[in-house]
Image 1 (cartoon, rainbow, N blue to C red):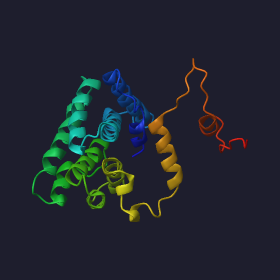
Image 2: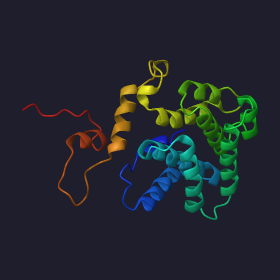
Image 3: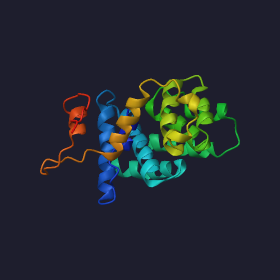
Image 4: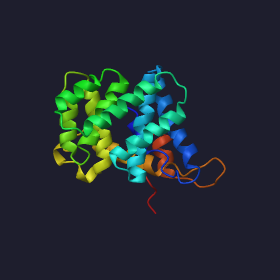
Length: 221
């Protein structure tokens, strides 16, 4: 649930794309490993960040991004224990998303979401099946007997990235706490920090917010 913002990072992966995407995946995994040290705790978070990055910056469909991340996970976490268990669930989620069986039965086939790999697979199912319908994807993601707040949050991250902020129905945004802060931080993640150790360029607004933790107040000329 917490790692989605990492997917907005590294939007300039045109050169050395493979290495930079691997770095992105590992940053997401390390972020999760602080509290979830089991491979099935941190590998799914790397997958989520990767999916979001591919959707936002590479204009992949949800299903294309999921298929892409399956290949990436096998490279980044080669020989890692439990990798194939996670990948099998992701592949199963895609298959189920394209069948004619009810959502209730399909979600039950993937688990209850109490484990990270189940949360990811249920969210993938809802996101692939209803990639163009934010409300339907969320409603499906939270209507089961398991960890529905987690599956709802992860599904919202994926489908929200796919449809774009403007296409999320207003009823999902109207009462959202800290909306302006969320949008500002998301924008900053997308544009990244332009300051570097060996360059003279400075960004007073970035320094104020992220170094000194103060409200940026430009001087009035």
